[in-house]
Length: 412
Ligand code: ADP
Ligand code: MG
Image (cartoon, rainbow, N blue to C red; front, side, top):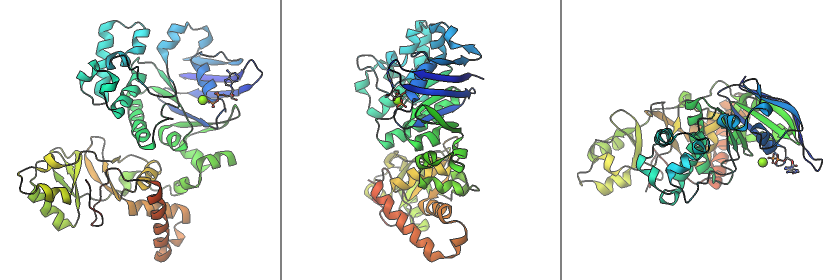
């Protein structure tokens, strides 16, 4: 057992019981999300784990060793802490920002420099950026640096307290993907506080639901969705996640259909021909290895027609995609909310393997809500789709939408 908390209680000096008999055992490589109402004791628990706060009673052990007996430097080598936001220090270079904690932990300078290079590669930014200042990077790049900074000191356990709380939903989703990806690759153990159920369900291997200092439910996202412990949990989950009711289809890859695509090195003429035969107004673009690199719409093709350019020169590389192993439950919301009609699906190597269509997703949601029994009545089904469509248009704006129909082809 990597981390264990037994009968942990915190009573603040004024007499407030912030955490009340908290128990949790965490294995290496787990991603634990704490979620609960404000004031339920999430931050207090996190702060006890790295001894920023002392518990009133109970025990915390790392690899069986009581942290109360551990020397603080040793403890900090094992546990990293990221507070509320991912802001970088503006007067420090990217390199110094990334290696802030390694420096505090007195890593030798060569090892720190090496680590900075290694980390910046993980987020696919050029090494030259290490010498720049945060203001010279885009907002999105800065946030990615903020995420790798949390991993830079190579600690076994990373505590993150609402790191994305202040960000807009789209930025937050892309950073969630990054965190999840890095966590899986690094095998580190994360304890992550959020007030966003979507975030908890998509990131966590187990979710700890808190209310008034107590654990209400501790379980995998799946079990929480299937068997919410009480009304509090059910309300926290919300009705829209009933999609879980259809267990047979779980991953995006299972519902993907064939994508219409072109290669970067193809001519515009070839691409237009393909569009014409397949009756689509947008093509996904892949490189020679079949990796998804962008998309191109008919307007743009027409605009550059005869210029001698290739698809790769004119495509838009800002393309939204999902991975084939993504759980539908986690992606359906963000796809529908953004109003995408189709979303490309890629495999672990980034290769394009198909698309999921909005219609497919709406069908699945429909099944989950109304069951298989009603499916024969196509009228009802059509109505449900209509309703769903309208709602989504209100809540979400498409970003770089990939349409493969002839309705609104303007991709910009
Ligand atoms: P959360 O992170 O879940 O919002 P906290 O752990 O910050 O909750 O707080 C839990 C409870 O403890 C709240 O009621 C809060 O008001 C109280 N609390 C937090 N810090 C202190 C403190 N330093 N002194 C007294 N009460 C505190
Ligand atoms: Mg808090």
